[in-house]
Image 1 (cartoon, rainbow, N blue to C red):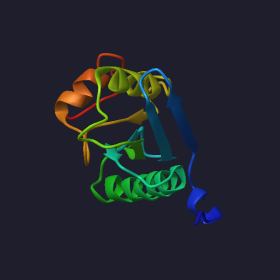
Image 2: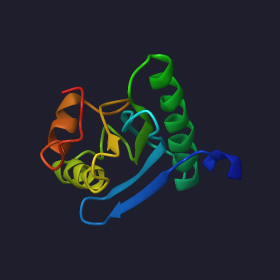
Image 3: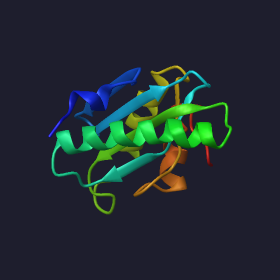
Image 4: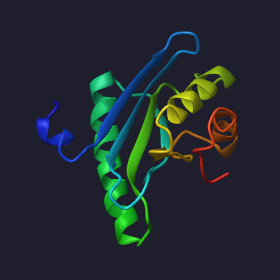
Length: 134
C-alpha cells in the first residue's frame, strides 16, 4: 500500500514507459543538497507498478543517507526497471533508459545494481554521460 510519507523529501519522480523497447521504469531523485543524486539502477520482476514505485522511493531515500554518511558530495537517487533481468533485456531497452537518465540533465547519476551488468550500463552510456561505475 502506498503511503504519502514515501514521497516526503523527494525532489523528483520520473516514470517512463517506452513502448518500442518495452521499458517501464522509475527514477526517484530524493535529495540533491549535497550534489547530484547518485544511486544504481536495478531490474526486478515487480508484481506491480506500485511495488516498483515503493521500492524506488525507499531505495533513493536510502542512497541519500548512504552517500551523506560516506562523506560524498552526492545526493540520493535510484532507478528501477520493471522486468525480468534474465529474459527482458535488450539494447533498445538500455538505450531508452540512457535517454531517460539524460533528460534529467545531470541531476541523477546511475550505475549498475541488482539485475544490471556493467555491459548493460555501457549501452545506456551511449545515450548519456551520467553513468558511473564503468
